[in-house]
Structure formats: structure tokens, C-alpha cells
Image (cartoon, rainbow, N blue to C red; front, side):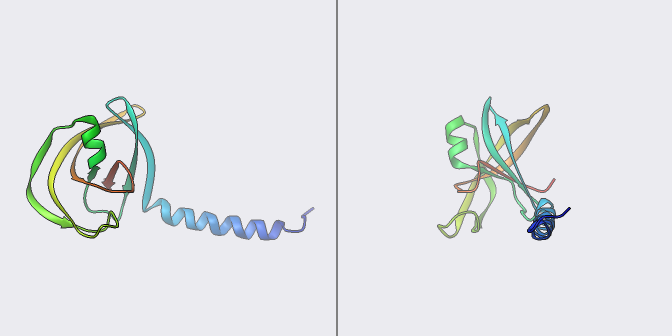
Length: 118
């Protein structure tokens, strides 16, 4: 027996499911371990670069290397364009999966680590 409002709930859950399926292909949010501490990682299929947050890099005292081809980056924060002049190699762990990624170093408000699609 259906109750009043069940039909609305069914429609609402179907729309939420469709929205979730659309965004599932684009953005993946997860926590990872870097140097035995938990940090926020976002994998974005629309992103074209790997980015490590300056706060993370400074906090962990990671070795920064001068970027061989500096460029301007503008969509990660509200400050306008940012000049990318450094990159860093970051080792991370997600459960039993271990990997390393070369990231440009940029101050951002979204996460500690932002990766392009694999």
C-alpha cells in the first residue's frame, strides 16, 4: 500500500540518483594518507593538471622543485590568476593502494590534493 508522499519521494530519489550519476563521472572526493596523516584528495575528470596545496607542502616540509615551464593558473581560488613556478612529488596511500604524483604547487581552497583524471 502506497502512502501519501511516496510518489514524490520516488521522483525525488530518481532525480538525485541521476544527478549523482552525472557528477560521479566528473568529481571523486576521498581522504588519503600522506606522511601518516589524513588529507583531502579530489580527482576531477575535467581538470588538466595535478595540484598540491601550498599549505600541505609547507606542513610536510616536502622538497619543492622549480617548475621548468611556469604558467598562469586561475580557477582554483578567488584571488584571480596565480603563477605556477614550483612542483613537488607527493607520495600518497588510499587503503592498500600506494602511488606518487608530480603536482604543481598552488594555494587553493578546495582540497589538499587535486588530481586530474587518471
